[in-house]
Image (cartoon, rainbow over the protein chains, first blue to last red):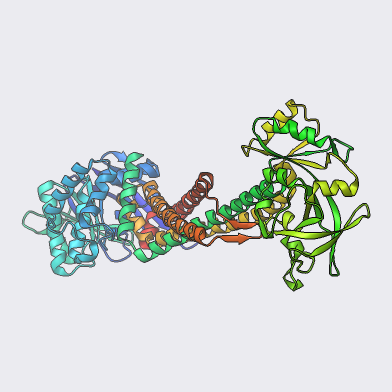
Length: 235
Length: 400
């Protein structure tokens, strides 16, 4: 359902050029929980930005559910992000003046849902992430873990085709990280939510169905986790 | 479009309600003051114009001024013309008069005022000078050997207090020498001193028409015939009516007679007003621009995040526009309240101009014009910084 072909991304102008992605091809199936791992500068976040339509590849194509997203104009890309993608940022990125409920309410409202539908969807999704009793709190009144769960709820409220998470546990302690990863796993397992998550923590691997390891802008290796938790290279 | 506006309004409302109250209040206060400034000075200028207009009617010209035909010095058969005019519906008073230059001397002080020769009763039917006697009494029909002086002409014993050449503080009952332009000099007892606040009245002198005609050997003539009408503002129609009644002399409206003087004053005021208005609007645009710009730059990352989660740029711009319009709306209301307080204060303690107390004139057009200009300024000052900041690409904005 997500196909990236020969993706390159070259930053910089003039003589000094950095190839953040250097001909990456990747395919992600519906319902997969894929981890993109690698050291800093390996290109993992760049690849996620491409899938999230936050950046355009220098060359190559991306198909999401059959749509060549490279051909979309800015307004269509914005609509695509709103309706088909959910994005979770490293630092939660909530609107500080909005309560948890309002932060989640915002994308559904922008999508044109009625207030009743928005409220229902918010309540459902906030309960799902375990924040049913914190909906009227402002981000500043919540812990990092809670804020990240609000961010996940916001990303999920429009029932996206693809949930993208850019190091969502980077600012959390291990306990809260585990809560977030458990939540992702539950969403993936129970709702068949396709998730692509960037991480550099080895212990996160056990949550992923598939691990794409990157280095210097290329895919270094791919591994798959079996039913019994064993991680082995894909054939 | 409506959906977008709803989301933008939602964001703007939350930002206003939960944002920095201090900055918001200060901005609103500044816009309120700008609104006051946009209205106050023009209202005073209009007030001055109204005052001078009314003074022109009440103390100088009445509503219409009839003057001799071309190449003639006098209106002949003035009393016949007066009777004809008095029969025309809509006319409440007619006053034939002479005006001439004369030399008035008192204790070595020699002044050359305009000398008006009037029929006091007729004059009181047109002008209000007779009600402004501050000392002594006004002329009466048949008075001879008596003169009424304006208080500026009468002057003060301490000449430093005088703003025009004066007779050095002549008082009622004293005798002044008047030399007419035919060379005749006569002595006149000062019967009264008038203080009207109209410069043309307070700097000049009045004798009876009867006295003047006796000095010059004239009979039933006039330099001017002043006409008072029931309704002010319909002078042109009345002029046509007079023409239809066979009045052949030149007929001027009070506006035409006072146009140069008023235009000079109002013209000068309008330059000041234009500068004041321009400065006020520049202050408004700069303040709102800075507030919105700082707000957007401070929230640069947040704007990037909103775009990343699929909130259209136009929604974000609109949300800042709504905030600017909120500042405008509340600022205008606050300014309106300040303005009401100022007007009440001025009603109790009026600003006194040389022509008298000035009441600020705040009309609907002035309020609408000021509100509209502030509205447009707010739109521009809200839109431009939001447009600039939201133009940045998502990743740059998110990375800060």
